[in-house]
Image (tube, rainbow, N blue to C red; front, side, top):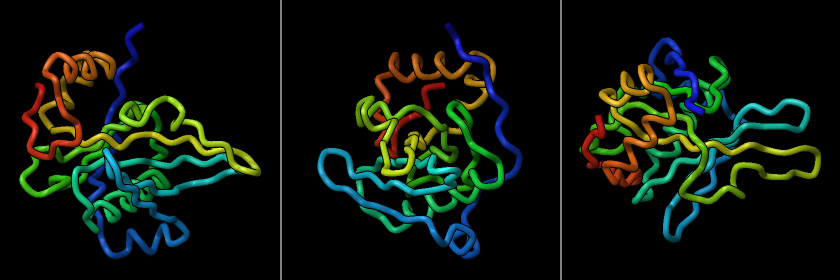
Length: 166
């Protein structure tokens, strides 16, 4: 069943020095291997939290800043699955992707989405870099239609120089 298109949250999520201080208790983990990833811990309520994973082909401090910005934005706008946010600049140099689409963590397998914790659990969602040109398609046709478009165009989501699928 197609999902209902969601409106983008207002404003830009562009990071700033005060962004990190606003999420001072957040933690960043960097993993290496097939898909280097950062995971930024965000809002927790009654032992249940929401975290974001960002997958990139390089290690870059800017990616931790981008996840901190996402956590800050989430704290103010309550991001959910299928939401998006403008980031005000390319996610990596040379990229056309200047938005993040909150999606299931497909690259990491279904077991990553739900992470049990001693006193609760964390849900981990993927902050998927997308282009501004792809956002109208998602609003008009829905999240699943955009993901199908990515499949049809064989989009490599970790490629910062990937062309827009729209």
